Length: 288
Image (cartoon, rainbow, N blue to C red; front, side, top):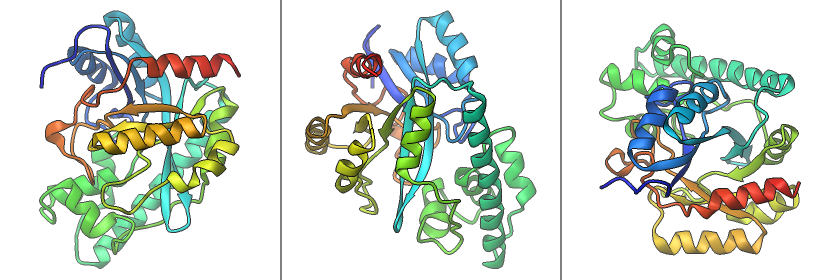
């Protein structure tokens, strides 16, 4: 697929090595630039460590880098991911909360390794930490260890067979609700957006929660997303407008396929996000 022309590409959902992506911040910005992306958000899980390096590379290349985050939150029987944009991410209190989340990720991942060992899958916690390196450890690093050891043939298989929500090695995280995530993002002057509200496997459809979340101050809904067909996009955009939310979008690029993802079509800028989305977000921010 050819790269987009200059000045038109938008991607508001990207991950780096700081969490569970494959590329450094600078590498990701260079790849996005090469694909025609000119406005992007770094949305690593529970960390903003890559934002400064991405912004520096963006300044060099003429790419507008928005400070972002992705937070996992819990609802009965499932989870909702919340994206935050335009964050005052250096705020000390905010960073302390994120550090607590990352500590929880370590305990959760250790628990998954212990469960896997109990199932006879001999991967070590030390190897999972080596794979994660300095990143915020998460399930993709456990999945990589399973793949490396030959217990699965792909990353998605690791999630589907072992560490997905219904898998035998799944471990719950510390409970954090979508409304708490909205409040945390707003505490650093950010905009809160529900990520990938409909999953292809049918395990999640966040749309029934939109009235409650909109009343709590939700700012946007990720409507343009990898794998979403035009009918679903149109439906989600309609729901966003109905609830006064900005329809946003992005590729959710990690650099390798995760559960529900197809690496062949997933790269920075692979999702057609209207350039006006960022303008709408900035307008909403200005009206605060």
